[in-house]
Length: 294
Ligand SMILES: O=C(O)C(=O)C[C@]1(C(=O)O)C=C[C@@H](O)C=C1
Image 1: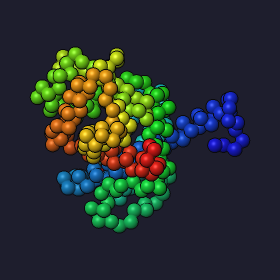
Image 2 (image 1 turned 90 degrees about the horizontal axis):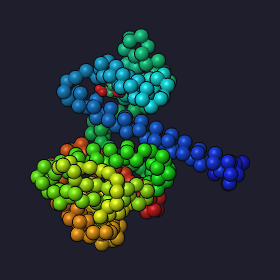
Image 3 (image 1 turned 30 degrees about the vertical axis):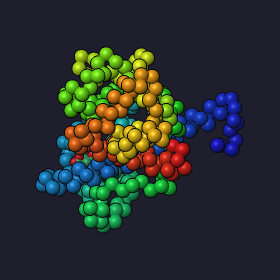
Image 4 (image 1 turned 90 degrees about the vertical axis):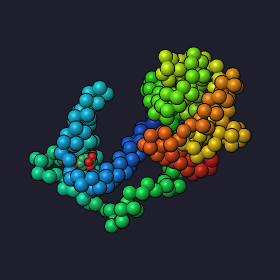
């Protein structure tokens, strides 16, 4: 808490807004850290495929996409360009590539990056994704601290993201007709610590995330729901420990739960599996770092 700002009134609003700004700054850095991991992976794949490190077309494409998104978000295009230039300069530096390969200073802020500090590592150590260190996680806010920020986002965003994630995850059971029991029904998913809830149904053979009163609701913390979806914990354990709860039409809720248990995990796209596994491990480690309260 800032020492000279009051705890009530407009001063308090400043404190809370600054906390929001801090969370968003955390997100910026977190995004950069995740980007670096992907750059290392893409560098390894390019080497394996015998492709050149530097790819000016790809860089152009990144800038073009950035400008389009900046326009849609009302962000100054120069700001978007500068941010992306910094990220790409770092991407090049990670791969030991020239920061500006004679392209007329297209990455003008490359010089702002610190000199490479990468110590020589073998490929395995370099590309392995380490468990986040606990001290860093204690600094990283627990899921419930994100709730007020998430509420600021349009609910259609989270609904679309969930719909896309579920479509990938449940593609095979959906095509095999195993989700037919959901036709015309509405099942709720509630992430208690994030204050998020969605209603899921099957319309014309397609999974839909929509509005309305659910007939049955599966409820749990972000960490526990991710652990279930990522197969780090099985549904029985979570229900038995009351970390997962089904209310309303129990039969419908239990059918959904059983489906999750029987999910043909091998058929889930590898990328989605890795992402889920990472997200679940990360939030579990964050919960442990916050004394089990995240
Ligand atoms: O996509 C790649 O091939 C990368 O190496 C990543 C990246 C970037 O940082 O986005 C870095 C250097 C390349 O010139 C193009 C893009």
